[in-house]
Structures are given as structure tokens and as C-alpha cells.
Image (tube, rainbow, N blue to C red; front, side, top):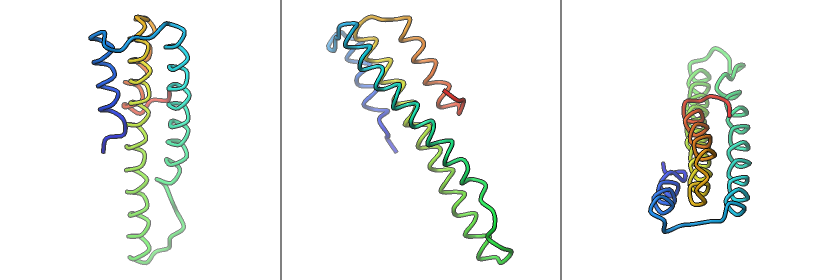
Length: 121
């Protein structure tokens, strides 16, 4: 499932090649939106993680299967949200790269790595 990863990679490539450029002010404004989105997605991850540990389904086999099904879906959702958060940080890095703000690019890329590893951003 591509949740923005390819778009982030394309934007990064364009910024690296000089085909996409921004002023520092415009880049920081765009970057702030991507950072806000990454934070929102991180919050959704915390909410979905609560669903990974559902209880109260009872002891019947069918109830246990239902519980396991919900838990698998929650795990899949967390994985998709992690990838989405990583893509948002990568987009932030790309727009900052387009303005040549390399120290800020490094910080955004580090946040992307933390996101995919499951660390809190």
C-alpha cells in the first residue's frame, strides 16, 4: 500500500535535482503543514493501538476468532499509519531540501526514521 511514499520520493528527487525549488519562507510554511499532519497521524496510531488489545469477547471459539480478526486489522492499520507518518516527514524533508535548508532536512529525515520504527514523534 502506497500511502504517499512514492510521492515523497518523487518530490525529494525533484528537489535534489533542482527541478523543484522554494524560498525558505514557503518551504517552512509547507513543512509546518506536513509536520502537523505527521503529528495527527501519530495520534491516530496511539488510538488504534488501544484496539490491538481488545477484551471481553468471551470464551467461545467464534468470539476468540472475532477478537483475533479485530486485532489483526488494528495491526494493519497501525502499519499503514506508520507508513503515512513516515511519508509526511519525508515530504517535509523534500520541501525543506527544495529551499536548501539542510539542517532542517536532517531533522525531518530523522523523524521519518523514528516514525517507521514506531517511536513517538
